[in-house]
Length: 287
Image (tube, rainbow, N blue to C red):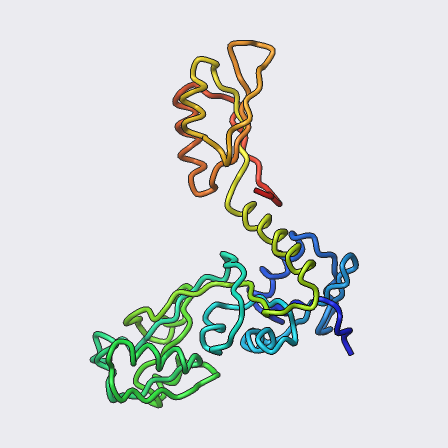
């Protein structure tokens, strides 16, 4: 038996969510080994147990208090309709749940599927969606296998399925009609964890990982007479670090910049005469 007093974290046992979840926990400082088909690992520093299980089961495990934290898709949480705390959105595993039909089907909108048969893995979300848009008498049936082929076999008129790149739909002559919802990986938790203090510490560590994914560190030399312009371009998280150089006509600047803006920022700094502009990836950042 797994000791009951230890904090427990459930993550997907396979797929890209598993890899990204493991990376997040490792960057949050948890020390553990993943060994073959073993379904749990013990963190050497905290005693935390990491449980590897089916992605769809994680919301239920958290809601029932079997585990204290879980990383799964936000779509899975909504589908299971369970009472859990969403602690953090993790920014990976982004996808969408969409309605799709055969490319030669007569349907142009989801509303036109009223009175027709729709296959879905996420039955609750599909039914909620058709009810919300006013499509009446849509018969939603659960399919846990290759949903796309069911349209070609004539079992269903449409599907509600997870779409990442859309390649699988194209390969099976399907097209998206409308998006049901957008989803991504989330860190969820039970209302009463086994070790609230350790849970809170882990959440702060995860915040550091998420901040490091959002920001990059820029260092550059700026002409002293252009420093006001430069710090306007790079105001930083609180304030940039500005230090004098041996040549008093130059100043050294170190600052956090959002990764999505980095290249534009570098272009603007270069335009006002800044040189030796260096970008450094962050592994962890407590802000």
